[in-house]
Length: 227
Picture 1: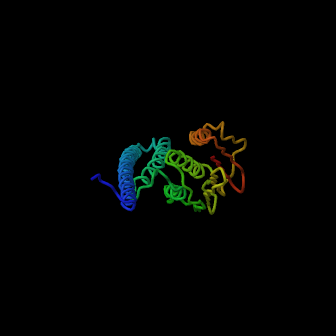
Picture 2 (picture 1 turned 90 degrees about the horizontal axis):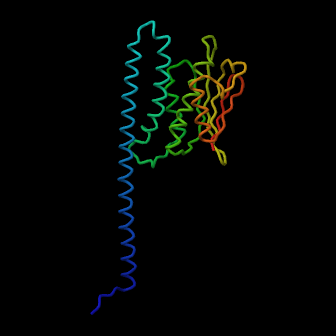
Picture 3 (picture 1 turned 90 degrees about the vertical axis):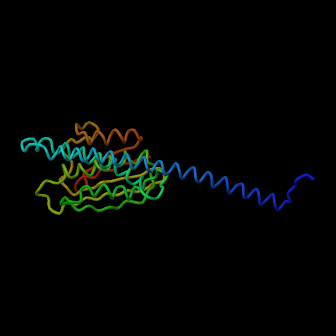
């Protein structure tokens, strides 16, 4: 006679089919995730090779060249390391679906500067940000911190201190870097600055349709708002 199934068997078969489909989809996504992790790992390694080459180039400078060229190479090294650390975070053991924890990312960037004589406090919430924005935000954070070390703290400033904070608002993320240094130069305008670092900050902020403001507040406060 014709092959037939009871209602109970139909329900069982339907559930089994859904489980198989789910297992196939999970396997597909996991395979994609593993490939992405491997890609991030390779990018991170390639960027590290570039950083090592720059270190070698800096070490090979003649004494008379170091004052002019060593700071430039250092800036390039920190910028590349800021990009590389995002790929490093995404190449970890656990699949992260191309999401970066802002708190962890900022903490890693501040370690670039941990050997300096400046105390750095972090007050950043664990905000999830997508990979395609994480590298740009990493660059901005690096530039803001780097600017403090370059301009806020002459040798005679005691108890040098820097605070990096990050908050999520209803429709935006607010990042702030506050120092207790010498304050803003007279007539300072971020958008007309000749500094490459400041240009990087302004260009990325504009691309994100965000806002960056610098104010004198017991030093300098840079406040970045990103939609």
